[in-house]
Structure formats: C-alpha cells, structure tokens
Length: 270
Image (tube, rainbow, N blue to C red; front, side, top):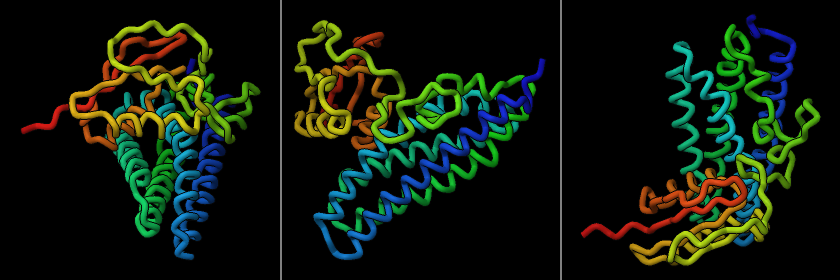
C-alpha cells in the first residue's frame, strides 16, 4: 500500500523543515557574531567566534549532512527525477566541508569573515533545495515512507523532533557523531604498532582539534591510530578536505563499542 502523503510522512516532512530552520538560525547567529568582531577589527574576538562556529559546525551541521546522505539522499537518488539533483547536493556537501577546513586554517579577520559568510550563503541555498525539491519528492513517492526513513535519525531531526525520542544532534551539546556514543571504557585492543590517539575521554568539542594537531605533527610517512567511541565520518571528511588526499585511512576496528582507524600521512612525491 502506498505510503505517499500519509499523515506520518507529512509530520516527518514538517520535522525536517523545522530542523532546517533551526540549523539556519543557529548558523546565522554564529556567523553574525564573527562578522561583528571582524568589523570591529578585533582579531582575538574573531578567532574566538571562529572557534565557537567550528564547534557548532562539527557538532551539528556536518553530522546532519552525513545523516541526510544515508537516508534522504539515498532514497531520492534512486529516483530518476532526483538523481542529478542528489549528485549536485552531494557536491555541495563536499564544498561545505572544504569551507569548514578553510575556516579552521584561517587567522586574519577578513579571511575568517569570508569563509564564514561563504558557508552561510551556500548552506542557505542548499537547505532551500532540500525543503522545496527533495522532501516533496519523497513525500509524493508511492514506494517511499519518509517517516520510516527518518525513524531513529536523531542527527537529522535533532532533539526537537516530535517522536519523543529526543536526539543528540539538534539542540546544542549533541554528540555530533552520526551515530550513538559507545562506553568510553570499552576495551580497545592494540591492533597496530603505531602510536594511538584515544579521544574517547576528551570533551567532544576538543576531539577534532586534537586529531588535526596530531596529524599536523606527523612526518611524511608517519601514522597514528585514532581510537573513537563512534564512526567519526564527519572528522574523516574534514581531514580529507584539509589534506587533499594526503592522509590515508585504514579501518582496523569498526564497532560496535570501539572504532579504530589508522591515519597515515602520505610520503611527499619527488
């Protein structure tokens, strides 16, 4: 029986659009704070606002994007009328990830402001296409249940969804992981002779910066093993955007309680 335009699907569509509006408002607030500091010529203040924006992007926006890729985009991409659109939307996800990496390495207020404003502008156009094109396609599809697609997708709907399940990705303090947290004290067997970087006991807002700093310190050809309480896909996308393929990844342990990924700096070509 067709699930098209069912009340549950309509409610799911409203929840997605509502969460998109919250994401856009939060992003605009962070960007406005950064631009205000840059306009004042307050370099230290602009850097603090940059760090706050980066934390939000890593905890909220990037996990949301990856949750969409595994649910909405997968279902819509199988439909001929939306396949090309989804390809373009995935390109925009990669562009946003690249801008996040650019923001992370910028230091001058004008550069910070430019990167932040670019993220906000691209994300606004991106959300409009999701709300006005992708969501309606899925609601109208006779063989797709949008409500079923979103069942349990807490990173997509956020903590304000109507399912009563709550969520870790939508209202500040989220896990930002694209998956559920595992126990921080779960056994992590030694699977490589390379040094290990166990981020499980670190506050979530410090994990990305710690891993990126460790990778920056690695010599060409060096490697480390990241030990994480979830599959760190947003972080891996950020690493790829930052190093342009200069870091290879090898999954040594893929859950269910511990994830271990070997990160290797590629030798410099001569």
